[in-house]
Image (cartoon, rainbow, N blue to C red; front, side):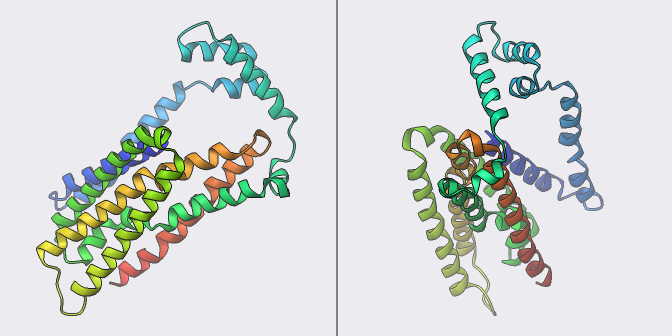
Length: 275
């Protein structure tokens, strides 16, 4: 659901950019300013959002934790789940130095996964497409309207493919989706390279047919990411850590993801600005 919310946000932003492009003098200002809407909604909503039952129980507020749990579940019959939370909180409090524990030899496979999954998730190149799609398509000869429309298409494909992942991940398993998505992304990237190498550059201009083929290939790449490495890059690391290293493992996963997101975002930006 986290990945679905992210993709819906990307698609919504693309739709706003597409809808405001004809407002010549202040369309880009409106596009940026509308981002304040979700931010305001989150701020106001956060004022009414209670602490989670786990957080309350871990801090010793057992009655409040149970009350919130009953409110969330819509029933007072939460005894079994409540006892599980109390036991888990007691075990969590007994754990010391999770970052030191995750460096131990027995936890190294999980540590490797905590670093590798988010690293390769970003190194697929998906952020270069999502961040700079209008500029990327514009540099390939698309007009402004067409480049923004292509961005909307890739955003819609990303949402749809994430829904596919939600529907199939428990039936087909994580490994099958990761392998199939990885293969499709490789084929798509090689196809894009061949098209651009043969039909673009120098005095060559992409024809309408090859432009459509290029957009379709980008969409296939985005679709493969959307049902495989996109959501599963978060799901798999969260499932492999024992309780004693879970907090450290999740912290490492998020940190590596954001680090590579920042790093990958810089080079395409510099290249495209030079173009």
